[in-house]
Length: 594
Figure 1 (tube, rainbow, N blue to C red):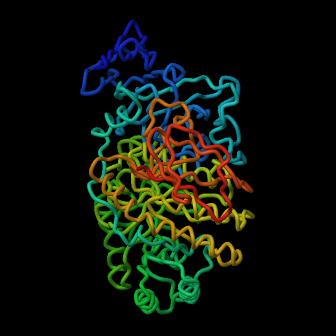
Figure 2: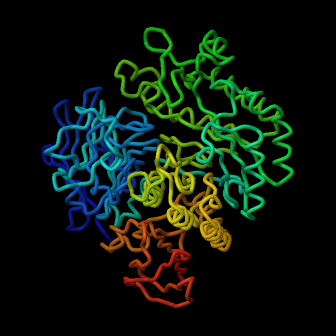
Figure 3: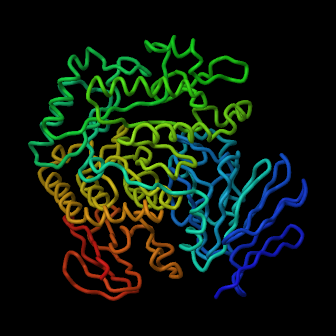
């Protein structure tokens, strides 16, 4: 049986397993010696008082690192990125590369783990560059996703920097990364039930990527007609921006949707569930703005004036989610609309801390801490609307709802393109969120980016065995072959729905991710630890999709065990690397554990 030890000499920390060092660090003792308390599976470290503490851990002594942060450039393992030291907040599009769902949880392949308390303001850096200036000292807006965070070019310092006032966190030591992650689970929790089947057994179809804001009642109905005519399965029709006349109001625009009740009834009669897109912003031209302002439902600055918020649809104000009356008003408006129109649920957008003044020190204490806005918003959604999705999260691991990945670009790479679909699933799963809704197949077609037919096909295949799938760009708009092969990917999904259901129930029972990195089966295997383009569905399915353009063959790593190639029937023994596996455009490599 392994023996775990934590040694402190001065400010130097050494975490060991038997005779092996699994983590080295240096504690900040400038404001006093931190209190260290043994706990099950590890130790709790608490710095005294309200003084700023900055602890540092050497990643290089611990193997590969896997973090719970959603990034714009989702490199994997974590030390492949240089994450600039920055406020660790949920952010729609941050200069450092942080995105909408974050958790201060980092696991090392050595069996070490670090988990910081969620109810504090943190500043985090991971392998930051020792040569290049901080991204916060530059004009970051033109910086492409491929450099947020930048890939390690040899100048990364190999350190995890963790800072905050009265800093509090836990360190764990276990036999491997899987056990270390599970040691964290009691402290973050996990959902106890699964989302409604309609949201994941069949595809969600959303209006956004195909139509953007150019929607109306006729277009929604015709879109449904096309889906049915092309013999695609469907579960939900999601009516995205902009069904409202004004942002913040809970009423259909009568010019665009002259008879929304009839539209919803028609969609229901065809077998669609119907949802609408909502967000916690109120623009000043909304009919409800005067009421929200007069009743104190909008977030204020410390001087009592309303906090102006610039969001992607203009200038507005933000629902004060720390105000119980404001939340009740928001929820009542949505329930009234839902009952009047016959809606099944909602797509809840935004909720990130940056909109609540998350980088303004003057607002840090408004609701306790910056990320509290995200936590309260998602907590409210989960408690009141089960037929839903959200895209932000902070300390919301117990919520039995879908957390959507941030809007994907219609590109191939890990910089928010197709390849980040997989690494993003890993990050959110290890953050403690098993029910992940991938963004739209083919991305959002923003600006001049339009996916090729090949990208749409490969995206459909990569998404086929993830927990849920949603379309917006219509495959039939990209040609007959594209329509046929995207439909074929859904046939593969249909064959594995029982596996998906089993993995979802296991997530609600044990907390284990639905989609797991390959090292879940081989935590000590270097090849598994660095594998970023294969994934495990639950306990018995390995998927190796194509995530690069014009690729028709790939190597496949199979961990220990017996595996059956779902396409050829061949039985294979792992661990092994299959070289040059043929993957024509109509093929998704899948291997079943036997």
